[in-house]
Length: 415
Image (cartoon, rainbow, N blue to C red; front, side, top):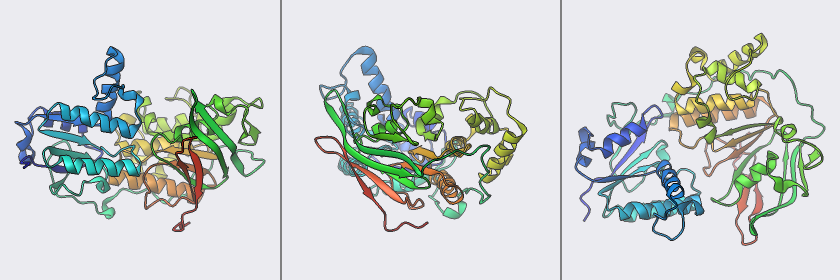
């Protein structure tokens, strides 16, 4: 019989999660969480897994339960193997930090079932940012909204959420000349690495003004597909790959391709270490630079001011980007990506790790872009967000010969 308590803790993006974890593991919790102070805990998180991988690489050791290095597993398998490692440390409880992030739906269910079974003999403190990720078998549910780490009843009323303003999207400084409404065409694209097939005969045509969601299980080739679209993958040479009116390998540079694309990925947030303001971060999008090194024109400043009004952050324009919530940072980086109205926008898991409030903020911005511009959006995510309605879904389905592509048109689409 397990006498160790379980807690679901829903965190705001404004909470210093690292400090909360440190407080729990060091036995300095107060209130109802003080029950863990004399127990042995261990952290299960993406960061902990990454540190484990780096440690194995640095010392060339095998610390996982298997005879393979953790890096060689897919994201879902890495979590499974690292959980075995955690259990071998004989903890009294495990802190689960957003355990379902970056997992496909099948892997999510497998992990949830495993955690439910383990909960009979082990304590869990689950830290999540999205209310939909709260584990149903854990009865104690609470919300933490600030760094006092005081637990409160959960309130996820949509009326409390920050939303974008319905201002008109600012016009671009320059328009992109298009000879065709077809932006990307893949005509039977296949990719293998070291005789390991990744994708097999992919046919996908992406046109101006469409809203696609790219889905597929972990390891199915989504990153490979994206690297084809951005022109960065040398495997595109010699294949029927057409990017913005030109066949790959016909004399174009990667820059010729990338100038047509605005990209956001969650990893970008960690690239920006300078103490730039919100306004400077947006302005840097005109120059495709990490940081602002060129004096912007008056017109560029006016456009940046209009964007700040659209996202409701005009009053914060002189605030340091690093002091923003994660959701606000994401919105600024998405604005930076769309500033010049490129024909194609790639949003790679823009909602991963955000709380419910900031998820609404980002989805509102995406919907505004779809309503007010003719930009094409490729949205990459395992989650099917109810507030986002892709016109089409491109699904990668793993096969022995490499993933094949299947196109679906959701019947519940609302323009």
